[in-house]
Every structure is written in C-alpha cells, then in structure tokens.
Amino acid sequence: MQPQKTALITGASRGIGRAIAEELGKDHHIYAGASKDASQIVDKLPSAEPFEVDLTDTEALIRAAREIAQLDVLVLAAGVLHKAPFTELTDAQWRESLEVNVMAPVTLTRELLPALRRSSGLIITINSGAGLHGVEDNSAYCASKFALRGFTESLQEEEAGKVRVTSLHPGRTDTDMLAGDDGRPKMDAVNVAKAARLAVDAGPGAVVEFMRVRPARI
Image (cartoon, rainbow, N blue to C red; front, side, top):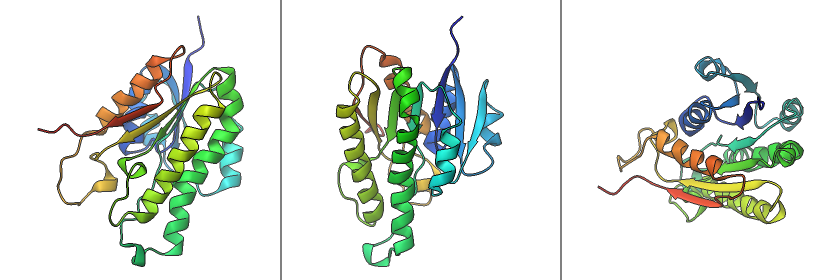
C-alpha cells in the first residue's frame, strides 16, 4: 500500500483555506495551518494534525516547516486584507500585508521545496482578482497579491519539471474577509476548493498554471 499523500494548507481554520482542507482531507493527511487553535478543523478531518505558527514570526515558521519531511501539496491560502484608502493605511498594516501575504509564502516555499521536489509535488498560491488589477481601498492588499503573482510565475519557470505550481485567483468569496461589504454577488468557498482539487488531480503529468474562478453571472 502506498503511503497517504500529505498537504499543508495555511489559513486552514476558516474561509477558503478551511474549504480546501476539507476537500483535500478526503484523501490526504492534512497539516492544518493556523495561528492558533487548529483543533477546530483537525478534529473534523479523517487524518490531520495542527501546524500552528504565527506567519509573521519567520524563525518560528522555519522551525515548524523543518518538522515536515514529506509533502505532496502546499496550499498557501492564509492572507490578510486591510481595507481603507491609501492615505489611511498605517505602516504596520502595510508590513502585515506583505509579511503574511508574501513573505510567509516565500519562507514556507523555500523550506519545503526539497520535500516537494522529492514527491514531484504541487504548490498552489491562493491569489485574488486583486492580483490582476487595482482595487479601490485595497492598495496594500493589491500590492501584496501582485507580488505573490510575480513570485508564483517566476517559480513556475524555475521549478518546471520538478514541482508543479498553480496560481489560483478566486473572485468574491463568502468569507470573513468580505463580511459586511457592499452586497455584490459572492460564491461559496467550496467552489474555490473544487478549483484547487482540479489542480491537484491534473498531475503528475500535467500542471494547471493559472485559474480564475468567480461567482456565476446570473
């Protein structure tokens, strides 16, 4: 019997990350990434364990990643959004946006790349429509997502033939991040999880490099 495949998912305690953990948890052992109390998702999955770490603490992130020797899928789903006009955003909000949305994915990818190369694995970065075009009152978020897209696309070129890399760009999704907004249509996070599943199931002989999924126009 082949060993069960494994997936590390950041932001697995809620929203898109949680939906992806529940989807991939059907046939993967899940490392459930959360800043605290990952038990709420771990306890609901057939095979899972917590990956509890503050994504802004680089040294702690490195230590936690080095505990993982075998990995097939890395899903970088954690993110923060500070919604405000540019003139009202603080330096601290800019730093957190870049640390969580860009630097944490970079650090995790660097540390886990050897394991992913051994398994001919897959990296999925959860980006956004904000990684494709500017959005009013989202300057820090857009800047971080543009940076994440550049990182992902460069990684696709460098790791071609060794690790598959997917840039997944969900549209408006019904999560805490968009709670209390203007009421425009949103889709369920399950729809994004299904898109992530497509990327997982496409391999190992093919790679889905880019996906844009958005609410249906009714």
